[in-house]
Image (cartoon, rainbow, N blue to C red):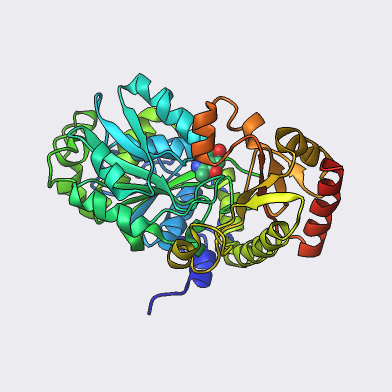
Length: 426
Ligand SMILES: *Cc1c(COP(=O)(O)O)cnc(C)c1O
């Protein structure tokens, strides 16, 4: 019998500590692990035996988290990283070579657009950003050098829902892996692998940890992609010069991506999650289902209240009937449309800034997915470095404010918005 999601959130990846019986996953605050003998050491380095060598590569606390998130997403394996942005680089790293590109959605989180438009170019990679609502546009952007498609389940901040099944069909047709950033939905609301995703990336900083204490990331591999079929993924499916000529796919099958990410990715890029952070995220995930239920319930109520208010121009929550993504949301995130959305205040940029300054319960921060309700004016902060056009495409125009609805009493959240709207539109 397979265990249910609530059970997995508490138990997956963790057993009582073999050394002490400790019930909670201990923080293994150690850099290195004593080898039994020289032969044991050699076997570990050859990947003939799985075990711990050095915490830049693996650590028992971090491994428990990787296994838990893999179980929740229905993946074959996972690798934890120092941040969500690190996870994105780690997801692309085994797939890409200089001169290759990733076809990605224009509606990605602003930080990701920045990373893809500028920073990855230093590795000789590039991104082609297109409208992922249009499968034909995705197909048209794919060329011989494309190595992956990349989108978000529910886009931050605009509340667009991606039609993962349709996008996965395009990826399959071209023999490419689909990478889905599932940060804003979490596996409680959507399991992208069930919709055809190959890799799922997370900023564990957000809902997985859930209380704004940690910076972390995770990459989950479905284990289902055939890296050998096209000849386009030599790091995974040809002798890898970075690991004494090992063909990871031939040797490790469904675990090829995960082992490559640890043995080469973490070894050489060093974007490692620390055991303390992994422990906090494990604790957070134990209550992920309970929190997400309240997050989406509150978000739905707040969105409906805002939409009915004459001081508000529009609300982008995909749980609203007025959203162009409403029907898609019912298919992709049937348990609720997340807790992140934007709304436009009558009075534009100035009214938005005033509203942010008058909110009391809401914290004005560059974060989301906290138990606390959070607010930010994306255009003057997270999306500041983007052009007006890019901001509009990403759903972060200057007249909208982004809310991350927390799990407080919903009447208190609404009361705070009410008084701030009065001040902002006076
Ligand atoms: C925050 C965020 C990221 C980046 O994660 P960090 O942990 O801040 O590096 C990536 N994608 C989405 C959707 C995010 O919200």
